[in-house]
Image (cartoon, rainbow, N blue to C red; front, side, top):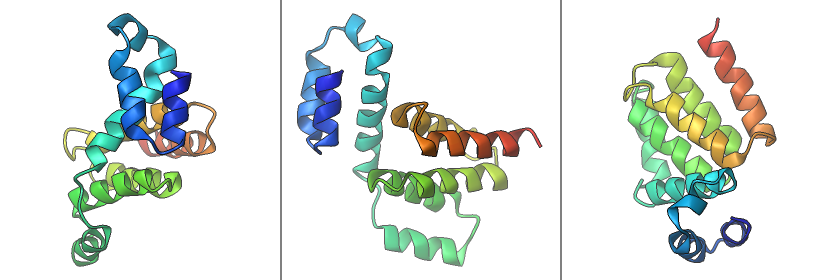
Length: 135
């Protein structure tokens, strides 16, 4: 898990994936591998999202275009802007919790797992999510 994490931090996704692919399922189920698996999954999803500028234009035209907001959150995550990623998903939760069967909240939880429990973005995002859900 540590080696794969180092590759991810260095931007070498292919090597990180190859480390994960070489592990037996019992090792991949270890909690130490959870953040690595979450990051690899997110990187795969982000690869085909499209142009952030076009997505922002869609949001300007229709602030309730939750798919555009969702895709922008994934792009923000890929660019390392955790606060923007969390805020985009939180806005979807605030506007339409039912979007994609609560998909924004579930994706936010994936982000928290990938970032780790002690990351400031996780702590802030969890606090904001709790205030949305339990107000």
